[in-house]
Image 1 (tube, one colour):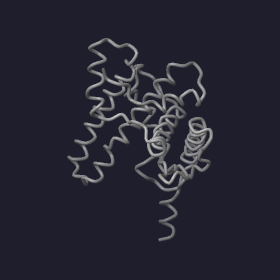
Image 2: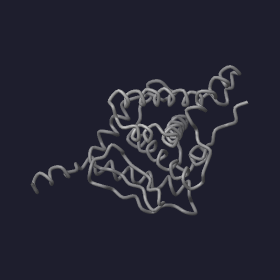
Image 3: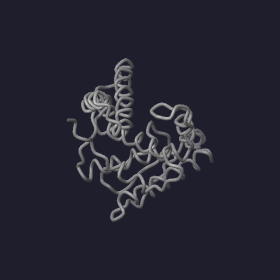
Length: 213
């Protein structure tokens, strides 16, 4: 039994290195967004989880799940979905930046009660912007359309697999939709820069939905 437990908890060096990279990016980006009140603890757990990382709602720490993380990151780097630049290749650091932006957006949601992007907003906004040919919001409209389609497909998939209504509600909540919009906004902004510093994304992570006229 003990031998089996050790095998289950075995974490490869690649997973550990990836977890350390992700923890470092989360910590540095949190400091950039919350310079006066950063969270100094990013706990790395050896076990596997459906999540790559999480923000603790008591505002004491972030967490990273190490086992299997390298493969999850590799999967992210193998797709250009949600990216304006076709064929763009994500690095491990890029994927970690997306996850970090997602979790730090969750911290903003709970600490500052910001106005969040929602599926109902995504359904209305881009149509108006496209009809007016508003170039200012082209990237945001692209991301909102992508996230809307992703969440619609995700909800249908979870329903088809007969997951519980409570899990479906959490997985497709406004909080998760909003955080996904921000993570894709951040990575698309990153591809538009030759060099960047993490603090360059503070405004993007704090972005709130523009008024739809």
